[in-house]
Length: 402
View (cartoon, rainbow, N blue to C red):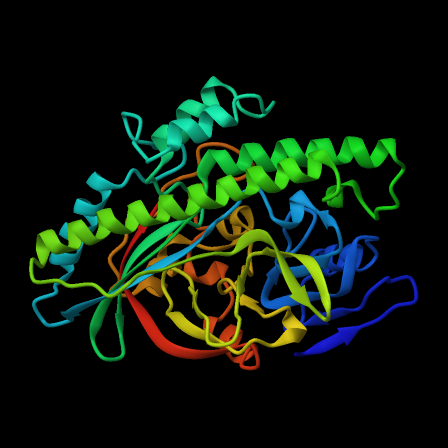
């Protein structure tokens, strides 16, 4: 842990593994520290950076309350990784990696708004969707997208990577979540929480942190729908991994895979910490219980790590979910150049940068996912040596971005 901050107006202190969070992230952490439902302390992971309401890379515990924005809009966003028995050799050329990337993209729709052409089957899926038909957030469009989005990557920082470990064995890694489903659920319940908190004149530091009581019907419905989105996100990653493994085996028929790791880093769950049953909110943070295996990715041009949890109670048994941003997407596009980003990517196979079509940086290259937009992953790992033990370092060979 790097520091602890206590102020008289805080209800709980802030404990940080992030050496110097930027001002907006610190202000968001201070709002959490003043929140009436937050218990014991606020924990900031070393990848901490500003989010909506709560910093990404933050962990809180709440007593009988859930805060939709402390889970985030991509409910169940998380990581998947699987180890193969295939050794990296001189035969694994850039052309062969490019062929693999192209094969993956024919099997997994990649990019914002990209989905399967036909609805996807999932055992019990229709029954689950029918059971949610009375929810105000569920309409025909949401239902249609839910069925077509299953097994798709999405855009933004979601990715598929072919990687190699220090023993020259090839791994496959993915980052994706609940797609449109989680976003719709999150926004609906945040708006509802704002209305309820206003009605009851709740003493919250900002409406961005509006909460729902878990003793209320609204709170219980959010928990049910969040858990549905978590199941959907896990199934989404499972299907992506299966398709990526199939593409890999198409190139390497002799490939055999170990059991995949499939974890969330945007969710809330009831856990026991400091003698209380509390609702732990991990927003851009990963569970790191004793001996629990986790995944901490770097940027698209830097290593990722398979880690083992140490079960540190001070972080609510959590660790970072990645490297964390230095620049926001627009800032990166305005400050960086394609040439310097190409240089940072080295020999890694990836699709070239495209121009932004709308927004503040329209016409500039979208460099929001370039390596320079993220913190140094080795420094981030070093800062949490009391939270996790790095087990395997993975270097990227090829990257598929949404």
